[in-house]
Picture (cartoon, rainbow, N blue to C red):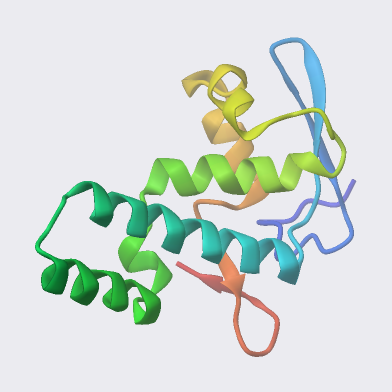
Length: 134
């Protein structure tokens, strides 16, 4: 299989790696996947704000700020990475749940997964549909 630096470069080319003795196939992310990831990040951040139990005016202001915020500014990196990995796996592993990712992925495979998925280097496609470098 040709080597690529990230999923943005691997359009249409799933990649398989072995994790804990089982093969897992990571698919390239689609525009819909990136839109779902964006919604996840914003919803996660809004949930965190609500848990702070701020006065109503301050909470409303903080929640509104998440609507216009750059995704990179509000994303919890591990939560976002886990969700991104799950998005890349779910097409080929339909029974795999997001909560299962914590048991599946540990420090021994994170570097390998990041290399295959490009999570560390790539972001959502920009206006021209090319993955943005981070």
